[in-house]
Image (cartoon, rainbow, N blue to C red):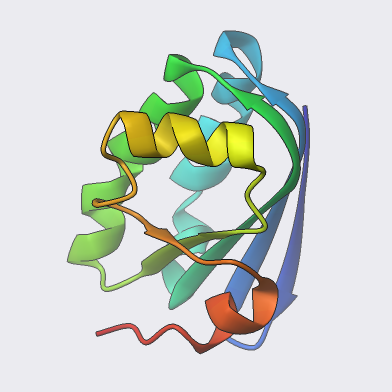
Length: 112
């Protein structure tokens, strides 16, 4: 798993490349736990190259969700492959998290 970050305005764009499993979820957790991330209003997660997500990977996002909501930081997933999106939908996480089709749509999601 390779995770890259890019800052655009008051938004951080995280690109996930590879498989998000138990071992790589530790790296993602460290990235999301970084206090500096709390200074952004949006976290956009580009999933175009995310081939697989395990329950551990999902757990990382779930564990940070309330903290982001409390700080009014919007967590938005986009470019999700069908097989990854199906995992979110089967578990009902598409109802808890914002999933949109592309960067432009993610960029324009309101923080309200």
